[in-house]
Image (cartoon, rainbow, N blue to C red; front, side):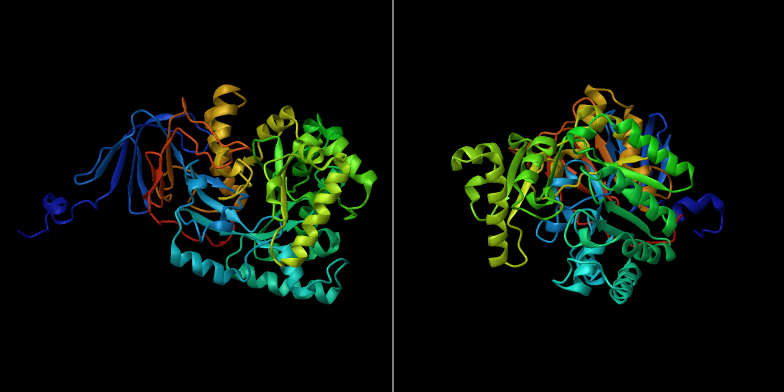
Length: 501
């Protein structure tokens, strides 16, 4: 029978086979109230949302009345570091993360084009985007002679490399101004490079120059970079990490709002923990690790000896999992001597093992009321700052911790707002298109979870304990997490910079 008649079009052109998730509370990522309904997707894209009936031949999944949300977007992630060895990305997908953004804190895998090509071939279980790291570019140009201001010619050379990485698809420029080699740069160097990113409508994210002693000057600096380079700027893992700064969250928000009123697009991301992870050396901004007065100041005002937990110590692995307070007892010395000694021993080990990190620390420096107020700011999105094989529990639990501890238990914000801060707001802040909301035409990155039970279980003592309550996760329409296990969907994609929406 001919197919000319409209009566027979459905028979001649049967609907494409898709997947329909029925019986769910849809929280679409925009902040709008949850609605009951269904979501249908074909291949990698959502085709219908709301009062949707499955098409003939569809795979139908009964959501059991649970919440269906967009996949979570981790704007400051170090999960990329082990992604080649762990493409299933357990720590990320088990907490509902479907997109990670690497290249943070001023460091990225150079050259970016080769990194992206490799990821495109192995197809990890989640989507990956990158920033180009200022520190990486600075080392390429200056080598080991980086403990000084760069010359104009050196800044020009960095700009050439940055443009190369932006052309490869980097979202913009990242800095780690509290770390070597970025700590030795001056503001004019950073602004010059930020202008290169701005020229292609890229963005700027920064681990600012100080999160403690010189905090307010560092906030002024990132605002100035946004003002002078004329591009969006984001404070990475915003925190008030010094006892004398505790209680200043309202003041910080007021400063940031003032900058936004001036027309500067400044935003932030945050992880929901009172402790950070980095190196012991970052505690000494002058890099004088034999300065006993500075060591005592660190232990008095930034992190107590019992709040400095050694996550990695290659020269003496027995120290791992112990605090500086505990190690000082083991060594029969005061805490300041232990702190300086650990750094000295780690640097000796690193010199004998070039390119390898000798130590890391998980340090308690923040106050819960500040964390809550900064999370509640309407321009703060959620991140993990975590890794697949890290010593900080954020790598396995940041997003589920927000949903369980802060939303369900403490009720610091509505569930719909929390989802927005993990999805659409993150996409906006990173300039990522077609992800972050549940709507027709969006990629089918989805998370099905139980808001009554979702919870993180990772701790500093057991940082790789998997969350509960995340029932199923889809990336580009394929399942990557189900029934408490990773599924080899290998459906992740490399996300490259595009013109700002």
